[in-house]
Length: 567
Figure 1 (cartoon, rainbow, N blue to C red):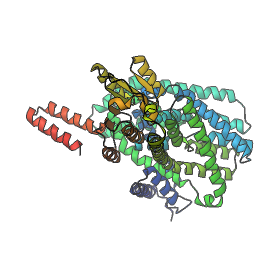
Figure 2 (figure 1 turned 90 degrees about the vertical axis):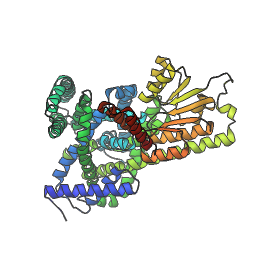
Figure 3 (figure 1 turned 60 degrees about the horizontal axis):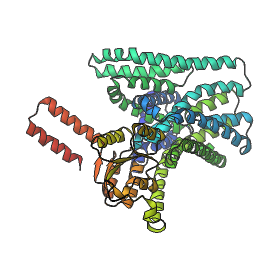
């Protein structure tokens, strides 16, 4: 049964997204996986419940625009600066190497024509911004080291789509006016960035301030929505990526005082349309083509995963980051991005590629997207178990304690070990410094370790999920360990390794999600700091003070709130 009525089509899409999300949640899988699989089921190549693909495409475009727009508001420019050289040079290197290896594999392994091999290289150099960011947000790892590296690479990939579109005529043999086209595209990017900065600095604060003065949530939400979609449409008119426009305006809006209200208002709408986007991606997969050509599809998917894993992990390691960060970055970025569809569509329209090659790339893209949340979760679990297993074996059998850690003299004062030198870790370090309490900083981000060096703070560069790195901080003689980074798997691994080195150490850890909190409590972590709950407590305290509640009553309420937070 097919439906072409737009109202019925949207209703079916929303119902399908709900069903897919519920099933994924019940099976303890990322909801994005449920969206993609249910999209395959209701798509035109399976049950065919929705035939109006234009309305689906429109809803999907709105969804990805809103998703990228809110990411722009949540990711600060300072966070992007923190990844330093890898954000630009690493991103450029990743694109170039992936394209080169992809072309080579296409020519030698698959025996494709030169034009199809080049298209393959261009397509696999791009990752899915929407898929990656959704996974990072769901896992609470947007501000982690690997999260910031992935975001920086994704932004650069989206910008590169503009220049890849210029290569298409060259692949097809049409080189007329190519230099002029390149100069024109670069000029468009520069102009758009300048316009966005000007609007963000002078126009947006004035506009949002005026709308906010009406005290109307509807008008404020409409203003934010128009800004987001207007930016996407503007970049599309300019011949640029809609993702680039939505992200840039979100990034600019972050610098205004209205950013928190904008995020609060737009988030429910974003989540609804983003679910439609992921369902629409699943609808592209043709199960019949998959069954008839399963061998070549499997080989292509494996080639994509291997190429991108080697390239991305190799680049991350070469820039001084740990193997754990490299592995997680590769696991999150190995899929083909949504803009790969645009490149292959352009190749099909200009007869550069065949219909079967187009279907192959389409199937490979959707499959890699479906595999991404599964592999990210699998990598986290396997890394956690592998690290604990190998270090337990070393502790119990192979490595004497004297060789694994320094043994300071009895006169060495007890110190604190801080794992993670982000904003939270820096605040802790400053507080300990003022209290004259000795401490060590451990971080596997070279940029943050350099900041600690400039400030004169004692620091150790390395991955705290490596027991040898923890040992260098004299953990056996430490009085406390503070695990301040947001990566939940790394937090649990670090806690378990620390308990192996020093069973009596006091551990304070950062946690967010319910399952993570319960696991850390079972591990015997002395104190858990839950940022969301702490923020709620602070809000209640400020409210009670501003209302003027009596001191004793205020203390009673705050004690109740604090006690409820520990349950």
